[in-house]
Amino acid sequence: MGVTLVPHILHPPESQRFRLTLNSDGEPHPIENVLSVATLVCGLVAFAATFFVAAHPISAWFGTLGFGMGLYSQYVSVTTPQRSLNIIGLVASFVGVALGIAHGGFLP
Image (cartoon, rainbow, N blue to C red; front, side):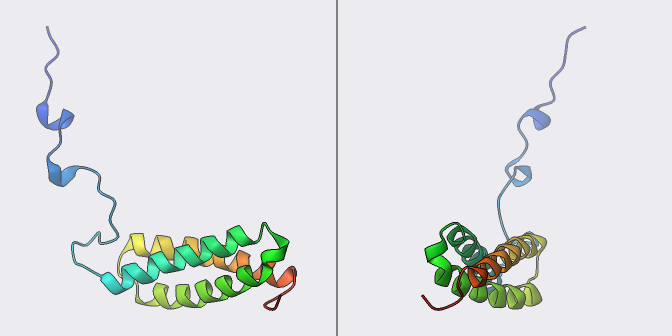
């Protein structure tokens, strides 16, 4: 009584391995992907800038830009991974713009 190893479980084919992609439907969506990533980047910049009170204009402007871009990106998104990045970026942008305004607003 030995243990038999099933080769396809230990070494799955290339098509079944984990791949990080925003195009989960197999079709290319370059504009939607750029919008999703840009929303995430703007949101992260806005959120990170909230930790520095003197950076309130950066937080307010990037948060506003990320929130507006994120809403449009969510409207035109095609795949679930794009929508996931959009939601993370939208929430971070909202927090960034809210705290940026609370710390002094859009002007230095």
